[in-house]
Image (cartoon, rainbow, N blue to C red; front, side, top):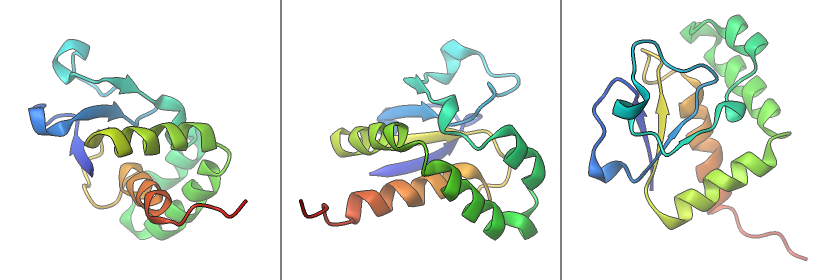
Length: 122
């Protein structure tokens, strides 16, 4: 199971493995209070893409396409998240205010697609 949660919400036991998927540490959050298991900043969108998107919902579909393209070169990190999701509940932690238009939403979709895809024929 993969869940999404804002870093500003309190951690809970049902979160399982909490992975922060932001390039920058969220403002005003103490590391010990966040209870993050892994900070995977390199899975986050590039600085250029993040600045271009600027959390504008009207740009979300294009942002999603561009971010998925960036993720193609981060297969090792994606597979680590897929492995975490297979073992336990995986909660992707993000800091964006918009719960529907952010990089964690895209990342969750990509991981779920990998999890439900048939294995390649060898």
